[in-house]
Image 1 (cartoon, rainbow, N blue to C red):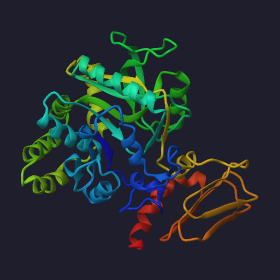
Image 2 (image 1 turned 135 degrees about the vertical axis):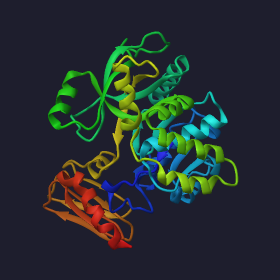
Image 3 (image 1 turned 90 degrees about the vertical axis):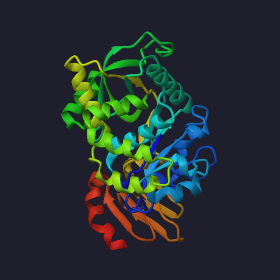
Image 4 (image 1 turned 45 degrees about the horizontal axis):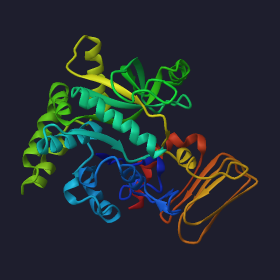
Length: 377
């Protein structure tokens, strides 16, 4: 199940309420040479891993028609439409409830729609290992850890515990373990702690991807988030009936808004430390190039730089003269976007709005977004 319900506020003005970042065709496709969406790349990543009829997308109901147009392999019954966003724990619960109704033994992966992950071969091999870890222990929740390349404060971290060795292909080519028990999760630490985590070599970035048994997810929710459990079970009862949409529209907005990390993973990890073995948590080393395309500086890493570090993208025309380390995203319409004597700037031009900001202010963009979106209606 691909989670594709985010708003992408830090990619304004290109990412908007009606067309969020995961649906934007603004990523250069290495295969075709054209522009594709992050969601399209996420769906393509499943080829050879999960058959078409076993793929789901959980997204805003408002995006259904766009997804059906751009990804016709996803039929209506495999798009879980949220009437409102209620954070990731309820998206996961929604998928788990629907899948467990179809197959009580279902094991499923929860994947993200806003990351670039390369190469596909390693991604698929690590996913396969995660599925086998859950098949070995159906009460095990598997996360994926990304080797950190800098002390990021915007990501969650997972600390590795003892390695898991009693399963095939659980070591890398150089003999290093690939699967570990989880010691703890830390959500978005300050810079000093992030630096210490990276230096220790014991922590990875929490990728936001999981593999687990659907029924185990529901059992966990019943224990730690009973309101979410009760709501999605009511939705599951109506799934496939003529009352399906009415029940979703009535129940889903009432679910308590909370993330998977806070709603499931942290309480399970705390219970394990107290000796509760109802569930266990493992992490698989996802030794890939992993890019969270959540801001304009991170998007810039998908664009080839010139000798001065400038990057120009978009379907329009852009240029930089006597400047360094700038990002220019020129929208359609034939207008030239030119920077002269500028360093470390981000300029994004669209027909509706133009953004100009220092790269260092990229994390503050969501503050601007909250004030200007209504003005563009």
